[in-house]
Image (cartoon, rainbow, N blue to C red; front, side, top):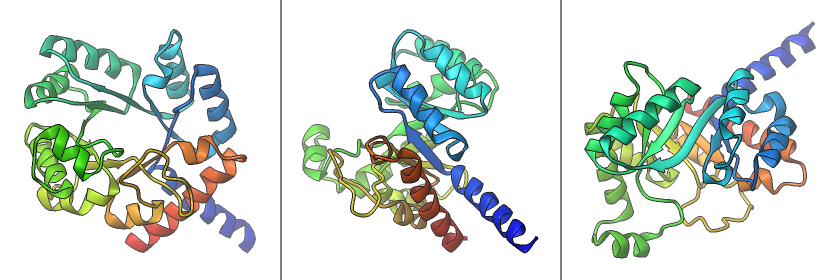
Amino acid sequence: MAGSTAASLVRHETERARDHFIVALDVPDLEQARALVKQLGDEVSFYKIGWHLFAKGLVDFIDDLVRDEKRVFLDFKSVDIGETMRGMISSVSRLGVEFITVMGTAATINAAKEGRRGRSRPKILVVTLLTDHGEEEMRREYNTNKTINEFVAERAYLAAAAGADGVIASAQEVAAIRSAVPRSDFLIVTPGIRPAGSSADDQRRTMTPSDAIIAGADYLVVGRPIIRASDQLAAARLILDETQAALDQRR
């Protein structure tokens, strides 16, 4: 009985880590995406879908995920005129999508919020600075002398002021964002997560799962370290275990 109770507690704790863990389906087609979701099974409950999977059948795939009680993060980094944004968000809301990314001005964010038509989802997340950018690229492309922390914190502050639900940012900037936007409900979703010893690939501003959670990230987005693993399920479980340990430490 004691062993059974301990196992139940472990399962409960792992499920809690699952709530903070998003797997990026950055694979070439829907067939491979479905195979990965099947491989990861009940261990993963939240998936990010980006332009990799923009193809005929995508809506059906999203429907299937939602029907299977998976959460969906649509990462299209959308920006458009107000009427188009309102229509797009309205359609996405009906699909049951949990998060969506937008880029642009306060007008874009406001239009996206209006598109929800009183619903609480999808949560509107604003991209601050892509994680493959270093300070040199940022200063050149955005014509700024700010540090990355200053730049990202300012973007987060403006997004919050416009009514966004949160931001996409490297875990390295979490502390700066929390200082700029002290709201407890302001979400920080962090890509560029790399387990210790794994390749950074093209990412410039990375952090381990444990360090990201300790820093205060709400969600970790992991793609290639799982997709490229010889045992994808084992790779996901290792990250979940590390995430849970960090959550317990942060609590």
